[in-house]
Image 1: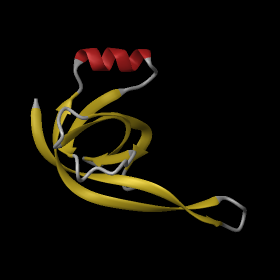
Image 2: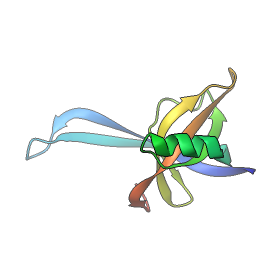
Image 3: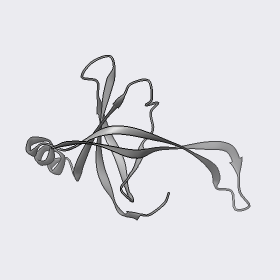
Image 4: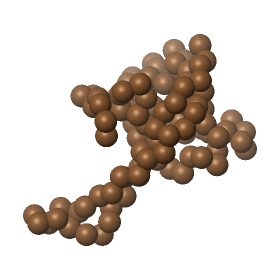
Length: 106
């Protein structure tokens, strides 16, 4: 089943600075978008499980909106993008798995 929903693409970038204990500081940027949302196919789910993943959703977004983000917030849950696919020049499909224990705001 395909539906249209709002989701948030999140990217983490390192600032080149370090904090008081020497850890690299990161800044987070996010953008709210509208996407087509589908459940993964059974074959995608089974292949993902064999690869140690937990595939959940496919988000179809305009190619010009997506710029390599690795995190998606969708309906209050955080998902990792584990692969992308360009079915045509206008769209990109983001294949996502739910991050274990990652709920709420990023």
